[in-house]
Image (cartoon, rainbow, N blue to C red; front, side):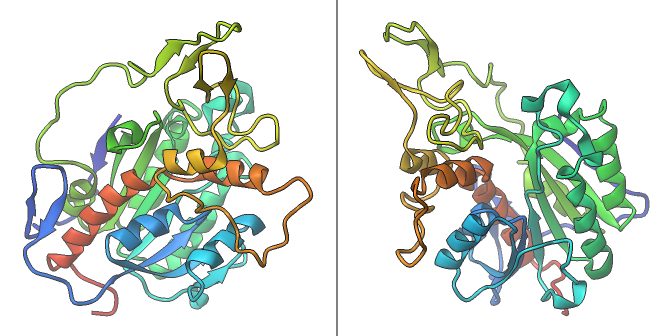
Length: 336
């Protein structure tokens, strides 16, 4: 389901941009200042890495998980960093063009089944409303949100409707699109819903997520990914990871039930480094600095978990470049 919502009275300002034919937008006039980005629910910095590639400047990060904090500090040592969005005050936030937020998915994930999906009432996914508290006060120009596609049908779609109205009531035009990482150069099938909310501008919200031409229809997103293992177990396993899940633990890794690498005489799980690459991160991205004390069981569990929770960097990079090009074409910037 891919849609765009235009509230009454919104303008449709035309950004002066051209399409490269590859779904990437190029500005006709360059922007002298880097795009300023605030990363909420930052994790290991998937959004941050993508906007770095798109010539952005991450000016603030918010992340509660202590292991993820060490990874953020490793890659962005000078960036302002806070831990808890619940205690974050608007006055402590710098001005920024774009806010990103891969807010928690636990309460809407299909992996929990129908009986464990509490949606926006759950303890985790309800943190979306903390994001709205900050948006109400600061009104950033652009919001880029991400979650599992189970968000679309949580409580028969009512939860997603609440999210749309929360954004629209604050003056944002909203578009959304389910995008699969397998079409962006990584060897895994990972469908996620991306939401772009643009203050007062329906055209830009849509342009950020959609190409001007409809692409050819594709078959099943898992087509070509499954094969029968030659291992004596006879398991049906993917050629590559179906989904890098966020399951931690030495024996479960990133979900034995779905992610395998199969040989003629054995089946194994991907290594942490392979999992990083499946998400589009450089090898070793989640290996902490030597100064970080290593737990007795090693870092593997934390690395698997944090990579599984992350966004696929190439997907966000594609979106980030489009947002950057639209803003560079002359749309309003903070305090200008």
